[in-house]
Amino acid sequence: MKLVAEKLLGYELNEDALFVGTAGRYEFKNKGLDVFIESLKHLNNRKDIPKQVVAFIMVPAWIKGHREDLANVLLHPDRILHSANRITTHDLHETHHDDVIKSLEWFHLKNLKEEAVKVIFVPAYLNGYDGIFNKTYYDLLIGLDLTVFPSYYEPWGYTPLESIAFQVPTITTDLSGFGEWVSDLPQGIEEGVGIIHRSDYNGHEVAVKIADMIHQFATCHSTTVKSIREKAALIAEKALWKHFIQYYEEAYGVALQKRCSSQTCQDLKS
Image (tube, rainbow, N blue to C red; front, top):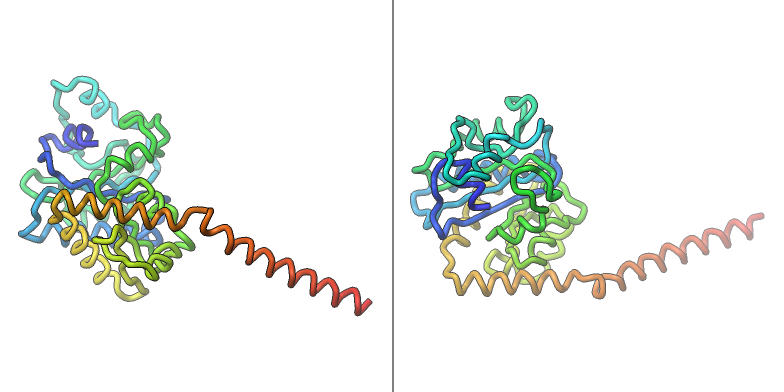
């Protein structure tokens, strides 16, 4: 991921750069892509960021294919990328109508070398054959330091759960089933999962809090990060089927009992 980012950006990143990512279906509001990008602007405006932050937005969009120029410089490390596009890893159809691109332009996130926050838009299906990374989503996930899934709507939310299952701490909201469930456990980014309250009216507040949590995580010492990763994995363990299956069995039993009771009533009436 670091190599692709450096070739795309056109300059080297610091060794301690923080890699942050989000992923999922391209539902700009439902998946919280809007507030995530806004949070990166707030973070970039801060003068006390202790390290570079490289944000990967990994959502499949309408692409023509991978960028041949980027693929070429990845194959030939001595070459440099001669392009004004320092943001996307793949060529988009109707680039100027793309919501992620429009939002990045609106917030003036331009990936300048002197700025702390960089944004890499990966609009391809990460199935191992995308032409740039050629790795699956899970292979890239373990290369991240932190994930952000600030959902506006999510019945459960497997992406944050998958993240902590790989010991990658995550930030999400209480509008996801997963976030609501974690809210009953010790939570906070220092515990492995940061939960942010989200409603119809607090988008700006959510963006600021995401920026604060990313900043907080960026200031953590390596020993603290190790502890946070271990705590994240412990939360993931609580969501294993061996713990959850009893609730599905109970729900199925209730549904079956109601069905049988209803059928008995119908038989009596006839």
